[in-house]
Image (cartoon, rainbow, N blue to C red; front, side, top):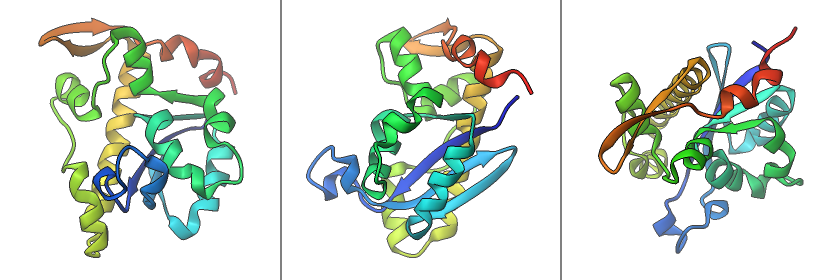
Length: 186
């Protein structure tokens, strides 16, 4: 498998703090990229190093990258984040939504497929960060990175389970076929 990174970020604020759905106003608390089992962490002051790492990756995977993470990162970039990374991104939320028509949380998908989920609630993260409880936020972030990796790899291997109107169904996510050329080879 080529150079794959799993991206997730945590923010300093909630949507209720910024007057609505404005991811670009939330502020980066910390970003993480999981590559070959190592979690690289970047605080706001290190954001350019995050972009350098993303540039080196053959594939960036994560859950809700297009409509959340990339939008949060946009104010820190002098380029269009989504446009730059879109061709080498697998957004598992977007891929599953294409098939089901439903936006499904990472926590829900991982509980259904792996009987494990998030180790906290995203709504608590900005408060924990503001209180200086960085280790708790980092633990939450790393857990999300590993969950994203598990979901992505399960989709590469075959079908994943989803809940549609309370009924469990199996789907074959499109990223297995779409990423074949990116992940094979030297």
